[in-house]
Length: 319
Image (cartoon, rainbow, N blue to C red; front, side, top):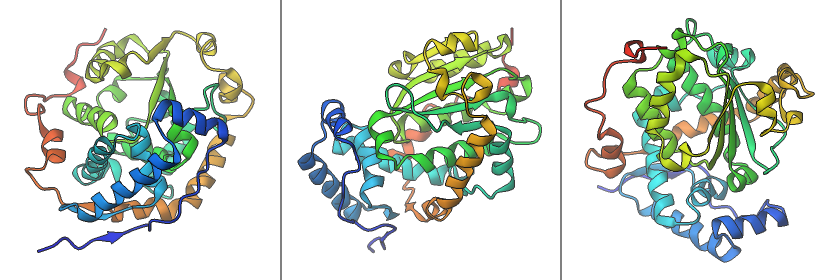
């Protein structure tokens, strides 16, 4: 019996939204030109149409280019990442589904200033995701609330073509991190989440800055970095002060509270308007579906090497 298929967005004619400078960068860094892009998009659509397990999937260009650009137009690697992306949404719906800015928990977390994409880009043209651990209440919200907030934010910006080409930078202020934050995540869940971010999320992670990491988080940080691949591990930078951060990130793009000019509350209000406008499209993501065949690689790979990992960060010694 064949799989009933539904396209959520059609294969519309693609018009490149990149500036000439970004087109040159895409050619140099991603091996992308008009011919390669056209051929790769058609290959992706043909593959989705014939896939034995994919039931519903977006096939519009901006969505498929998320994966092709992340994998530098290696079509097989982009296809594998798309399988994993669809699978994790169903394996872990409490992290990746029901992404709604009107959800009271997500709305409160955003309003508190836990996570915000900065409106201005860094010197490399990257979108910067700025997070403040101390603004997340670990006694009011769960790890799933935290994960869904992250998922909502990144889904809202992943179709942007400049983001796809230039990638993302991250600034994480860990001031205010407590044992309450540390104990939110089990060892198994943190490993699953890292694998989801590395292997299944179509984002080019270019630089990660950690600021004000308290001593109690040393063990957590060691565990986190141990799970990263070498490329991502080498892109982590630690900063002991905001002044130190300014040597790597232009303070003008940061919230006013960190040396910039625009207050964080204003950034949050503007971004929430964007999320409201994109709400129908973000909710439509939940219509995508892949059959979780137990013998499929995109399922088995997510489950392997996890059996012996148990416990939680409560059991880790802290300094």
